[in-house]
Length: 258
Image (cartoon, rainbow, N blue to C red; front, side, top):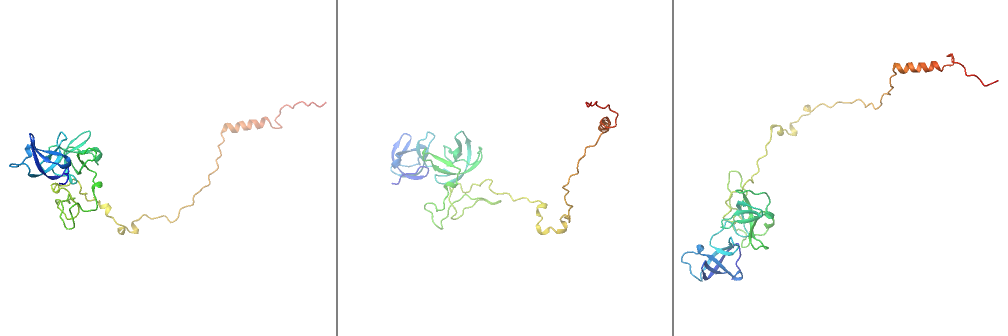
């Protein structure tokens, strides 16, 4: 018996009854409880049943016959139902919402919005979590069990007026989420104005501004500056000249000669 995979569908055998349901043989995972509300009618011990393994609200590993919108290793477009300090919670069709941690988000999320995520089993916490960082989960090899010519379900980028459709050999995602419309991925057509439609061929030489034939050489010489003489400065200069002139009648200095 192969080891059951958490977050996937597994075929397990009922081995014992329990007050809360039926115990299934989980191999290395131990006995796994299938609650009473998930037991099919007329089901008996030692029969095999296809169940999905996940954790309940008390973080106990349980089995359920319900199928989620997406399983571990798949991609899906899920709706945001709550945002908290530890991350956002997504509706994936199970009683306990799926956590999208802050570290795995690529943008700010709001309640009611949708986000394309990949579901995986966290190796540290051993819990199912979502991640919006999709590049690290993409590869160039075919999915396990797939080969050339097989049909796979995709989440595609729709064009205007068309719905997403399944394609062959381009990738794989959850079959239940492949028909959910992908939001806000169609780029709007560029808006062009009449002025932007002018091309180089429509411009004629006559429409260009005329270029002057020659320009005067630059005059790098600066005129010399002479401060103007005022009336007061001219009169002062004249008085000083008359006072110290040789024939101005000034008394001569006595000579010391005998």
